[in-house]
Image (cartoon, rainbow, N blue to C red; front, side):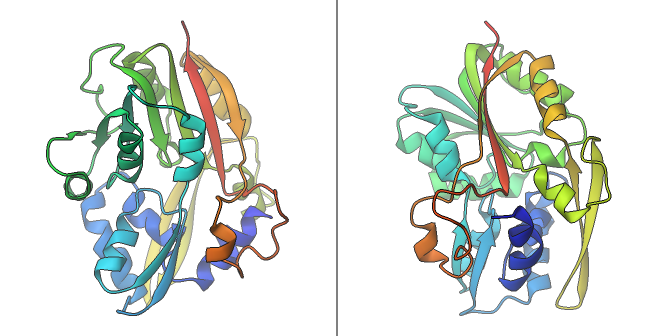
Length: 284
C-alpha cells in the first residue's frame, strides 16, 4: 500500500488524523496544541474518529474525554515487537508523551523512565501511570539529558526525531546514557512519503516541509523534516550506533477488523509504509 494513500488521501477522510495530531505531537509549545487541534476539527460527542499514527495518544485521549468514539492506529505494537523481552531492563522513553509505550513496557517488566518537554503531557502520563513513576521534563537536543552516563539498557524514541532539524546532539545524548551494547529503538515518518507528496523535490536532500490544512474554517501549518534513508543511517553511525534492524512492518494484528475499508486495498503481509523502524546498538 502506498503511504500517500494514508497520508494525503485517507487521513483527510477520517476525523482526527496524524496531521492534526502533529499539532500536539510537535515538541514546541505543545501544552496548548491539543485543545487547538480538537477545536479546529469541531469535535462533537458521538463522532467516530480515527487517529492515524497516534504517536503519544494525547489527542485520542482528549477526544475520548469529549465523548467521541476513538480508534487509533498506533506504532506501539511494532515498537514492542522490536523491543522483545524487556523484563528487568532499564529503559528510557524519550518523548514519552502521555505514557502509552511507558505503560506497555512497564507491564512487561521493564524499569522505565520517561522524559518529555511538555508539562501537560507529563501530567497526563502521571494520570495514566499513577504516582511514583519516574518522569522528567526536558527536550532532546536542547540540553543534556538529566541522567549519568550508561544509565539505561535501552532507549525508545517513538515519532520524535522527524520533528527535529539536527539529530547530532539528540543522538549523542541518547548514546551517552546507554550502556555499551545498549539499544536505541526508533520510529520515524517513512522518507518515501515525502517523495510521493513532492515528486519534483529531491529525495536525497534533508529538507523542511510544511503542509497547510483548514479545519472548521481555521488554518494550521504543520512542519516536518524529511531525511533520506542514507542521511538517517549516516547520523546513526556518526553517533556511535550500529544498525541491527531496519523494519517496515505490516499492520498490527486486528487492524483489518477495526479498519476494513481503509485496509481493503492492502495485500495480506504487505508493509504499512507510513513509518520506518530501526533498532540501533551502542558501540561497545
